Amino acid sequence: MSFSKFIIALCLLVVSGSNAQANLLNAKSPSEIGKKSAAQLNSDNDKPLPYGYVHDRDIMMGRMIWELIDLDERVNFPLYYPTDTNNIGNDRRSLFDVILKNVKSGRIKEVYSDSYFNTKKTLKEMQSSFKHRDTLQAGFDEINNNYDAYYPKEKEVRVKEGKQWVIKKQPATPAKELDKQFINERELAAIDISGYKIKGYWYFDKRQGELKYRLMGICPVAPEARDIGKDNPDVIELFWIYYPSIREVLHEAKSFNNRNSAMPISFDHLLNSRRFSGVIQKEENVYGDRQIEDYMKDNSQIQLIESERVKEKIRDFESDMWNY
Image 1: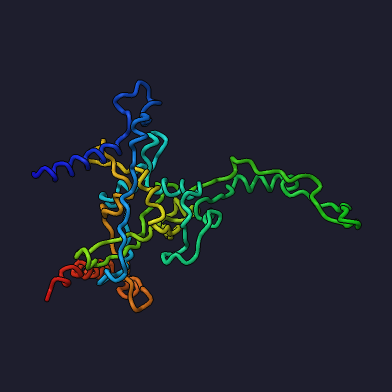
Image 2: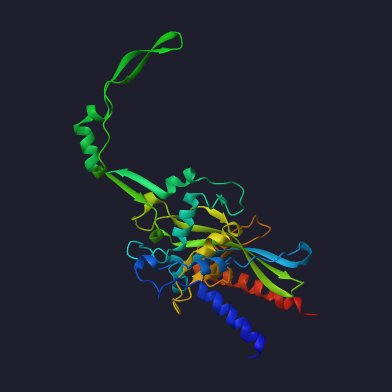
């Protein structure tokens, strides 16, 4: 190994080591674990590797691809676990927990209803998918037995509006609220996520002379909160996020490295380096970007073969550029 290669490898090792849990071996109490010293904070410049500028004229060939990452596959487990955060450290969270927390806090703002990023989606609009409240049968019995308390009769009262008096109807007594023991509330959690849809662009950079990939969007896929627990529930796209806008958030959150827990991998690194297994669902095409299942109907095996054909076509981009 040459000296320059040794220096590069050493730098990568130092950067990777900085991602590990800080002060783990020097802490005198559990509260000191994860806290960096003043020197570490001053020297810490841990940022996601910026994308290089690509001029439109340098893109010789390109193709937009939509894929599905199935979280039932073992290679995709770092995106799914941990699903129970009650008995695990604060430094380990699933990808959905990281995304949802930052959507709720307002740090992630580029949230859309479709993969073309046409219509923005607010947290209020997504609440019906995230949370579902249902009254139990015992609650209906309680209301029926005490109907007047929950739905008091109205009475007419005179209310002054401006210079005039008007008659309005209002309940005789305040309506009683149903106790929480009669309500079943279900909130979507990381354990309910079945996969992620991603949108990415494969392109041949003629300046660099190689095939490259740029992740454009990501979307968690899960059943709605009201359908959780049912047999074979339908899954929906919860929301699409413009990926370049959340790289810093995902770089700060680390996924578990099964080979070396001292060097966790950031979610941004994991996704950009394509350390996952995805199945192509569609490519941009003249038929309005139709999906593979739209023209390969009722045959999952043929759909997988077609998905592999699209993948091979993309791989041939690079080799075709060198054929004369």
